Image (cartoon, rainbow, N blue to C red; front, side):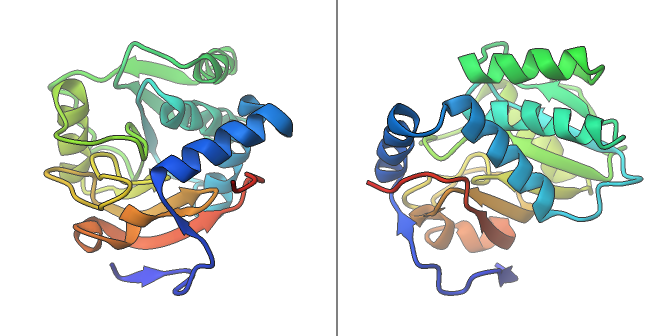
Length: 212
């Protein structure tokens, strides 16, 4: 790991604590849809060279993918034209909301296929798998991770590098990022196991999650 924006973060938590805190915040304070938008805004603010770049967003079917669809909408409103590659046909409820919004804004949304070549892009945003992933990547997700790693692009992973265990940092195959933007609080796996092999720069964005 080349650099961490906060070398001694105040809070490094488990995936389970993050899940419970997220659920508590949504139940009592802020909607999941609003948290997703805040996450996308945080990613947008964490990188200052969007303009003039060819940008691809690889989006999975869970809330991590939803962050990608929300980010696409933000970029489009800023006059930037990203391309979304769907890595899953499933969508979470909030993810579908931002998927549909991105489509209404005119964002190009394409299915990721086994032979999809991502080498034409300058920046790729990894929103395939979130912190709850464990085990070995398979199917389209595996193909997408491989394509990202072979692209030569500047890679931004959202919350955690797809394929990495959020608690242990272990990964048989994961996205190699130039920048990983942790959402809410740092997860333990970002500092353990194979994290140093896959993460370039690491930062965290506060989206108002109440820790429990």
